Length: 295
Image (cartoon, rainbow, N blue to C red; front, side, top):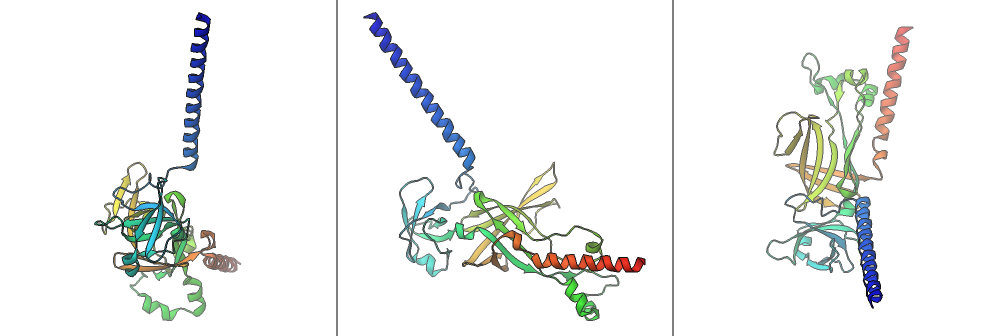
């Protein structure tokens, strides 16, 4: 009888041990998967952001958006009739797309705005032109331009493409071309607008927030939030931008009173191809002139 009792207790202990080890192993595997996948979009939300994130489901129309929440709960239907009338449906809401919905404060079944975030991701650009630097003697651009030959204007006034790439996990990068500060760049009579270094992006209650870093230059201006890293002397700024319109290959954004249109590029690598060719041509001409003068 004692032997039987001992065997039962032993078997019970072994079974409990196996279950515990299996549970721990399963939990560890789950944690490893989370590490490999990275943070969820909800975990990386900005403070104060009330946007509801999820996937667009079958049933989306001009009057209704059906969203499958990130937590895996049942799909939710939102009335978007008024949002459509107010042109606050940003994107085409294809089934399976990652979307964000901004709810009405008084009625949680109504969406005031919806954004197709998968469609928003990608590379967006616009063209910038250089301007004349302040020349010795106080000459202005209008006075200098008539004195330039056509070939000189063609060589100096080359458009560049500025913009950004929005990626998964709220990551962002800058699109643009910065030339090394060599003698040609320093002596050039023209200069391009400063280029921001984007690091991340978010949605904050229907607005696009682009984070960029620059050398610390004191306090933030124009209402931009700024966080300084004392060790690296780099400031992080958030630009809060209104999304006015987005179609397949067109994006219109508003920052303050400035409205800027963007066009979609297949990739950031395709930007500034012509500008690079022009820079190479300019360097070659300068090298030939230097060679001729030394002979």
